[in-house]
Length: 124
Image 1: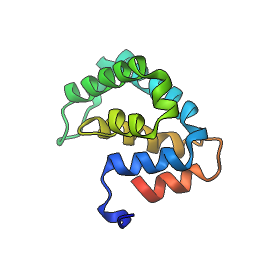
Image 2: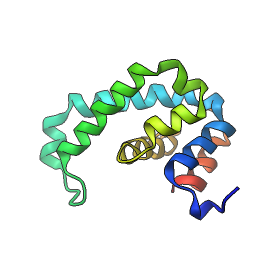
Image 3: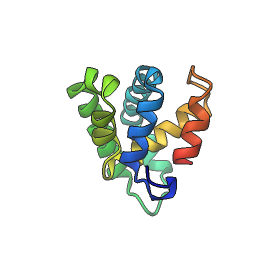
C-alpha cells in the first residue's frame, strides 16, 4: 500500500468503504439528504456564498450530479468500494462528497465509533 499522503481521493474513499462498509448506507442517506437540502435552498446559499475558489453554480451542479449517481447506483454504492469511490470521489465530485463526509462525522451522524477517526485520518 502507498503512504497515506500519496493516496488520491478515490483511493482514500475505496479504503474507507473497504474498512467500514457497515457505515455506508447511513452516510449515503445523509449524502442524499445533504444534496437535496442544498438544492432546495439555492437562493439563500447563493446569497451567502463566499468561496472564491468554487462558484455557487458549480456547487449546485455537484449536488445534482450526486443525486444522479445515488439514483443510478443505489445498491452498488453501498456494496462496492470501487463504485462508491469512483462515482462519488472522482474529479470535482470529491469536493461535494468530502465536504458532506466531514459534515457527517462532525455532526456525529455515524454509528460506528471507528468511522470518525478514519475519516479524519483520510480526509481532514
